[in-house]
Length: 95
Image (tube, rainbow, N blue to C red):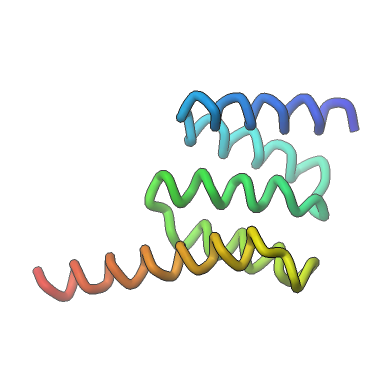
C-alpha cells in the first residue's frame, strides 16, 4: 500500500506540472498494484483527455463505472472523452 500511495502522489505531482504522459505512467503502475482503486483510473483518464487520447480515457471511465456506478468524475470525464471522439470523427470526415 505504501508503494501504491507513493506512485499515486508522484502521478499527482506530474499532473500539477502538466506532465500528463509521466503522470499516466505512474497511475498505470498503481493499477498493477490495485485494480479496484477508482481514483487512479479517473486521474489517468484526465491525463488521457489532456493528451487527446479519448478512447483510452473512455475506457478508464467505463472501468470505474463498472465498480462505482455513480462516480461523478468518471461520468464527466467520459462525457469529455465522447465529445473529443465526436470532434475527431467530424474532423476526419471533413478531410
